Image 1 (cartoon, rainbow, N blue to C red):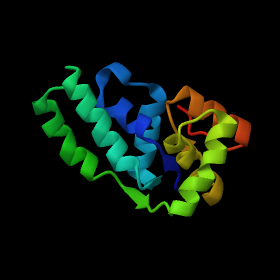
Image 2: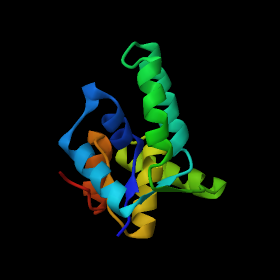
Image 3: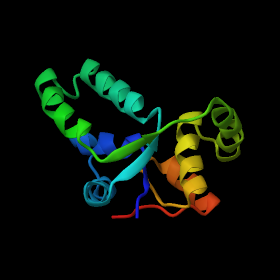
Image 4: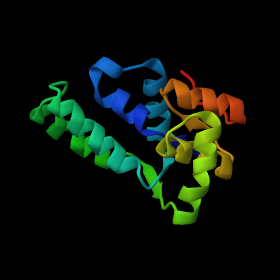
Length: 136
């Protein structure tokens, strides 16, 4: 069964100083089952990798090695309608999330699937909303 994968999981897989058992388990499951993510997911990952590069956490060579691995991840990117994005503001407000993170939660709720995250605030919101989490 597929699940929602958020950017924090992929970033923890890419950046050694953010690695975690939850991220490793989620990536293993992602590679075998595939996952889904909202439309902003690839841009969020690219932006975070660029920020990590600017801060010296990753170099150009390492980034070059990651790109082929990232582009082959079996993640179906789903569009986010403008009306959906605006309605997710309520979810973001309710759980003190960014709209980006609320989109992951909304997608998991809407599809009735689990969510993989290493973001503590998003994990708390999932617990409060009754959305199952992918665990280690």
